[in-house]
Image (tube, rainbow over all chains, first blue to last red; front, top):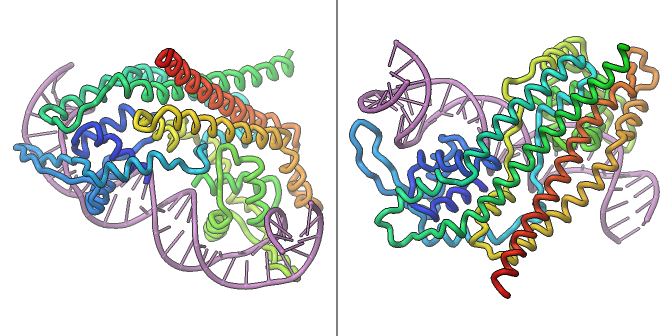
Length: 199
Length: 199
DNA sequence: AGGGCCATGTAACCTGTTACATGATTGA
DNA sequence: TCAATCATGTAACAGGTTACATGGCCCT
């Protein structure tokens, strides 16, 4: 469901192909929603069956023809309704395998645990870089502008949008920082114990 | 997969019923892994088919008989192998519908957004209370001890365990705080704009 | 020479949610 | 009297992942 509405939300900016959508999802929603290409294609065909999008085929040579999806009036309406209708519970359930492993950490040995926490920090630092790349959402604006040439029906005020996009990036930033601090604290506590245990 | 190993990990502490397991998952793993009862029953039957657990039936009156699952040697081995074999990517993918809605916030109106962010903060504060309740993991130790009477094979050093359990609770704490701070900052920024726009 | 980008999709599978079925006991 | 706790499960559905199928162009 959510992915379908996310797709509709993006198609509000410009008509796009499934492949384009995958790129945009990776470069804008990525920190709080992911989707594989095959999933996007599947959801697009559902959306088309429901009349929320229509597709035009642009023939190409040497590659499969492009299938450009445009949001319909019904699609816009459905999106607006979904957007205004917040669920009662807002907090997303979290599932984090790494934490399951930490929970059973006593059977693992502190050296191994520290090593894995170190890996975790490394990984989070590289996610940091990705967040910085996304920050200004240039990819999104650029791709939308490309696909939006000669389309008088859709005009986007990017200044207005970026305020909200920034909120989501800020969250990714804050949470990523918090993950790193947490892992560092765990390592510290494990080291304190080692010191007191081996004087 | 993860749920199966989480179940095995808990059964390492004591033999338990599906219902017990549900209670324990809710009161210990809950902040980073959830499971419904029906799912636990399903996974238990898979684990039994694979020989990782065995079940004994304790007849009861007025209620369905208890089916107590005990981890086998093969189960312990499988668990230990899984625990030591960390995946390459440690960071859990995040899916957060609320953030999708924020992303498209320009179409929502700032009043509504502030309202929903307020609701989000409320919700996070009540999650705070649940974190405090779980903190000392009394539920877990108590239930395990009850089911572990007369079982010489299983002895748990809870002092040793709680160090790692605390790591996971700390993370829930830190992240919950970060969510609240983020939402507060968003509201502030929305209010700043309103002030400058209406002098 | 090999990887990444472009471009479409199908099929099988795994995991999680929700609804259904059943029902006594206990405490507020 | 109503909700929670105890106690088992099945069935259908929804959503996400992975593997498969196809293949040229461009850059290093």
